[in-house]
Length: 365
Ligand SMILES: Nc1ncnc2c1ncn2[C@@H]1O[C@H](COP(=O)(O)OP(=O)(O)OP(=O)(O)O)[C@@H](O)[C@H]1O
Ligand code: SF4
Ligand SMILES: [Mg+2]
Image (cartoon, rainbow, N blue to C red; front, side, top):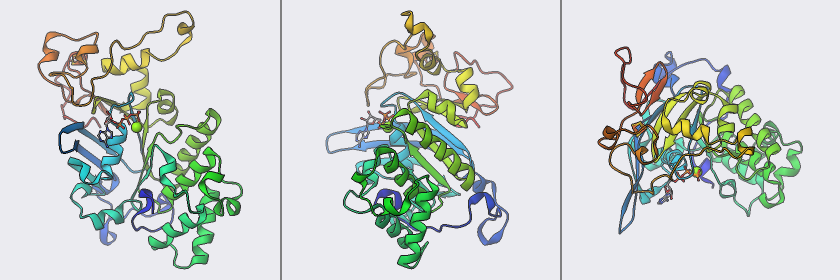
């Protein structure tokens, strides 16, 4: 079975229509209202010869029905963050910090329990969708297996009907035909829709979508993003979306966490971050976007390149490329500090602390 769906869960009423109730029917607690709380997440890959820290203290909160975009250049640690949340690296990585899903820390769960959460309460649309589908099995059979293993449907017939319904839900016009197809018989867009059907089959509280439109043409990309927004609206799912595309981040809205060298360097509402960035890296990222001026040969880009993994300089890791760097920047690596309600930036030089700001390292909201 794919990593998307290796647990148990129940396909129930869309989340938006469900009464808010905690365990035993009690009113939902604040923890339940924030289905995902990631605190000081650290991922270190370990081999016999070396240890490489790739994610270096990422913290954020994803509330019910909210979208959070992880935006950053290639290699900044977005996918590793997404996969670490689901503990998908086995013994090849040490994962530290806390990943609380509805109040339970996934990093502490025994593997058997984790399997029941993965694919059930939290599901992943991986960066490479081909890896999410078994190439040797028909789409319908993959869906029905998930539905039956997770106890959502108990008979083959009901599971088949539910699988077709899911395929229809994700905008596949001829679900009966697609259900009997192998993955290679589908177009890229249809395959991605099938992957999304698998991911939402258990009505997850949190859906992690890692570059869900990579390798699709522009029209299909727009359709897939629209589908995800629609599913999120209908099911009340919280979505963590990974992208290196500022356009996607702007279109999808919600909150943005900007990643650089394994850390969040800026966080806040998408519209605010994109219109008025407060960290020099975010500013550079946005200024390097193609504009009409590019045509006239005045493209600006961030000088230099990101540090290699495990080659992080002392002090602020962006200092070697930062146009605003001062001597103190080379002394210590600034944490993400709250700079305004709901906004954080890891740069005290561009955002000098004010008495009104209550500094809460690692979480802007
Ligand atoms: N399994 C692994 N073992 C060792 N290093 C890894 C592993 N997976 C990723 N890395 C390294 O971790 C760093 C971050 O990788 P990651 O895949 O998270 O980048 P990304 O931000 O998702 O980039 P992209 O936009 O290209 O997908 C990279 O330098 C990568 O080489
Ligand atoms: S702390 Fe210094 S080097 Fe880092 S982003 Fe801010 S100004 Fe630039
Ligand atoms: Mg990636």
